[in-house]
Image 1: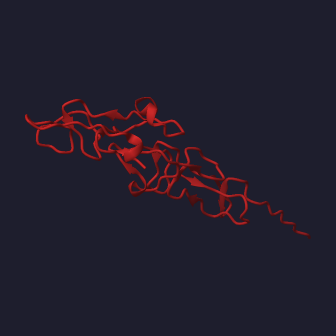
Image 2 (image 1 turned 180 degrees about the vertical axis):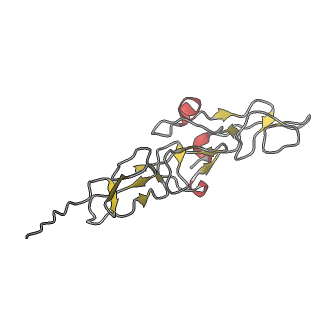
Image 3 (image 1 turned 90 degrees about the vertical axis):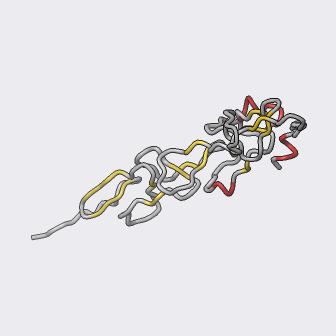
Length: 170
């Protein structure tokens, strides 16, 4: 009596363990270069994956942030910051919204940072006339005494913010 055993490899983009084959879940990747694929690998910081059965994670795009592992979608740029680079893993990598501007969250973007198209490409707004907007401003709604919001300039105080983005963001 002769026995023959046919050994088959684990299919690409799957994990295999104890005769169980599972497709690689979103938020993870399953590389094809390994002979034994028991565990899916987490998408690292700065990356994400929204599809099952992938061999690599996607880089976090300009305008988004990916501060955790195992992400299955990018997170919107947080208010008070300018998200003009890809693969962002931490708020420390972002540029704070400059003085004289308001940077709401969910900014959309163009791949090039063009100071002439701030409102079009980045949804960044100039501080309203007769208001003061410190660094890191994320809302246009003013709450008196709350200095994380624009503040009305007091009588007798010149409140001019002739600041140009290219001088403050670099």
